[in-house]
Image 1 (tube, rainbow, N blue to C red):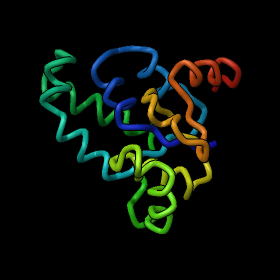
Image 2: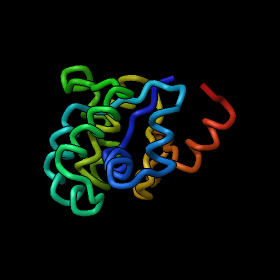
Image 3: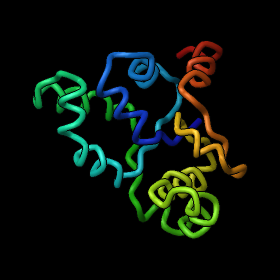
Image 4: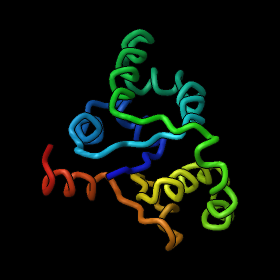
Amino acid sequence: MNIVVDTNVLISALIKDSITRNLIFYLPYTLLLPELELEEIENHKSEILLKSGLSELELDELLSNLLKYFKIIKTEEVIEYKETAHEIIGHIDEDDVIFFATALAFNCQIWSDDSHFKKQQKIEIITTLEMLDLKNHNPK
C-alpha cells in the first residue's frame, strides 16, 4: 500500500524522536514524498535545527536515514493530476496541491495531521494516531 506523506509529518520526525519517526521506520507501507517537498525541508532547515537541537551534520544524517523509507515522486509523474488536485484542495491551500496530485496518481491516502486536509471528501486523510493504529493491526 502507498501513502503520501505531508511534509509537516516528515519535519515532525526530524525535530523529535517520536511516534512519527518510529512509524516511518517501521510502517509496512510505501511512503511517497513529492520531490518538491525536499526543497521545503531545505527552506525550513534553520527552524528544524533550532527546534531539534541537532547539529547540521546530525540533521543531514537523520534526513538521509528517513528518506531511505520513502519513494521520492518526480513532478512529471503527477503533473496530469494537478488540475484535479487543484479543484479538490487549491481553494483551501494552494501549497497542498502536490500532495493531492500524488495521491490521485497513486490512488492512495495522505498521512497528515493538518486539519484543513480533511476539509475535502475526495482523498482519505490519515492522521499520525490513525497510522499508529494501522501499524498495530498490520505489523511489519
